[in-house]
Length: 127
Image (cartoon, rainbow, N blue to C red; front, side, top):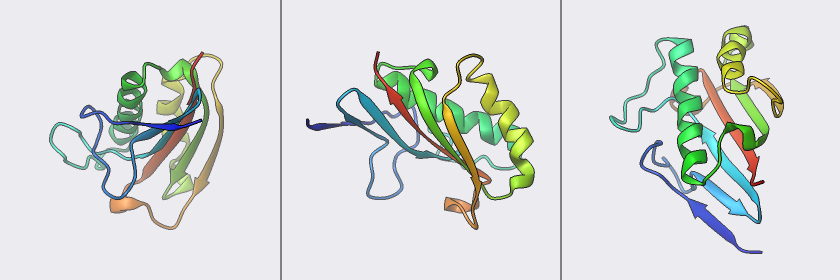
């Protein structure tokens, strides 16, 4: 089995030595996404709901480039800088998975890249 790299200009370019996503067989592994606007490169962290939506939209852009969508997500990991924000982020996240949501964990971490409030990574599977 060989890996295939997925990249799109509709999501933020990697800020380090990693790919936006990697296919391994029928599994797609997305790197953690933060709230960088792919058209401007600006970080959007002033409003937590807007930040969370942008993270999910970036994930959606990478999924689309790979020929998948949110319904193909089987696992996600949410990293929060403050677990006190869990409810607000969870509400936004839930809008993208209205039925049959993926498995998930949510953890609070000491610091996230660029001091964002939320980062989300996912694993998806082609049908």
